[in-house]
Length: 552
Image (cartoon, rainbow, N blue to C red; front, top):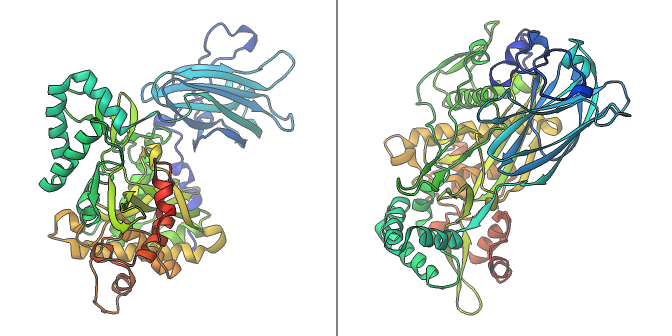
């Protein structure tokens, strides 16, 4: 593999020590005199700015302090109560904890701090309650680092326990509709319902059917809703994800690596907006994940932009400080792995959050159901919440720390996308395959090569088609299935919307597409049932497990 010898010269440029990650210590203090918050912001010694370590979830981890504090971020959902503890496993350091935020807002405002949890210990512990959605910064330090400019090194054991408000609050769709109807009145609700359904379901027949189903549910009818026929899956999935920004246009771009690692920290973030101006409490979209700092998110978005352009094989390239040129996705991943980066790729299955609804800050569990037509005992047919699948790409190393998704979406076609938002918890997650550079670097690289090839082929064929061919060439499940077929020699995803492809051009993508089922044109129920069971991330919806058990 190519040696990225210039890596060491760029380590400082790749750090997220500045921008919204900045922090540090202040004037000397004494925990015995904790009558007010210490001055922990604006530390003059830049070496003591925290090293950004990323999102933090409840649990215990060992943190290596290498001459400066370490920063983590913890999500808050409103009324989130956290207990945070720091100990020294070998009693080599005096831990110091501080919590800042909340974000978005004042990243440096001190929420709480602690040096010694009790008079007879050097351990630190504190509890905080955060009443708003977002995140807080947890800075793990030592007394010497914080107050005496001592570049302490050592291990700190950090334990985070969530006591209350530990996840996104949710409300089922039927309960939300009843609450909304009560709030606005029957006449206003009827008007808003018709307008909203027409907005989300552009096809007139689908909109009329969904409108009837919703009204029936409000009158006490049981069963899943809204339901669309499987044949409408390609149209319905145009609602999936609704990315907030387009992928780059297919034209040659030259990226200077040193500029990528130092340019501004102003990312495009996911956001919510009212479904209707008269209903500010009912919103649609995605909630930004503030455990991802502005700088780290911007670097991830830049990384996705680089991969998307290189994948097109149109003359785009990355130029390193030493003049080395990287002209393909393969070049980039080979260089990253060779330079000490850990790359993990997951083939993941979810339910699609078509509507992306939030009511008074609660995620609305509102799957769109697809009627497969597979007969069940008793005369009903099998219906499932529409699935979404993608590959999640985790890159961790000295230059690049990013989480990306790869799939075919309604915006930007098939492309790499930075993860910038929380998924609604009801969508679940099921990791079906994992590819890890620590175990098989070549398998990871070849999977990314196949992803680049699919992006190039479908971008070329999607020119001039609505949404770059989304729903015509395929949808998210198809892009995931192509990579699965190439890597595993099989496909375990349902439904697939790609049209039957008889072309045998010799191209890897055409050969693979010819091997995939085309479920909108008919399928074998037994094969479909096996793929359905492998696709569903969970069966927690009423009646779904019984229906799955009744499949052939």
